[in-house]
Amino acid sequence: MPMLKRINLCVADIDRSLGVYRDILGFTVNELKDSKPDSYSYPVFKFPKHAKLRFATLDSPSQQRTLAITEIKGVELPRPPLPHMSALVINCPEMDDVMAKVAAAGLEIVPEQPLPGPDGAPKGRETAFVDPDGHLVVLYKLLGE
Image (cartoon, rainbow, N blue to C red; front, side, top):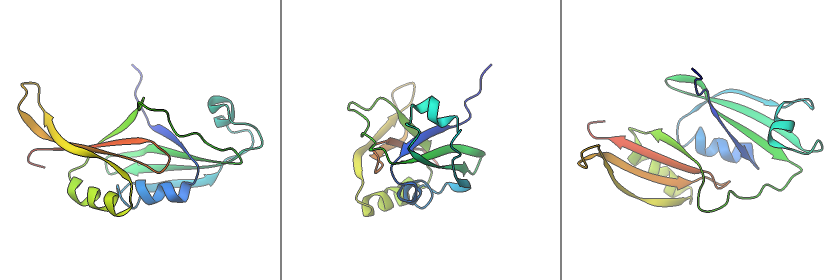
């Protein structure tokens, strides 16, 4: 059976994105490098050959390389369309502290609401924000965390 390894986000500025995913959310950088001209990312994402790519993988406390970020220079990246078609969903026990940092960074925030369990009773809280490149990030915190 296939196993999901990681999601890859395409961004305009990897350092700005690390300010969110590393500095605010707490992922740690596993690797940061320039991509080679024969990188598989070119045909997969349909990047023109003149684009310059930098690539980072980030670790969560429980999994190595759980998130990848690819910076594309030399191409203007469109913002993801609305409605949002995908989201990173992250269990975040430190949600209050993280969202304070998100607000301080001036990122767009979706108001918090209760997270319902299968029986409809609240089992936690959830909120979301949009990163500088337009990627939706949903955070949740379970009761008792």
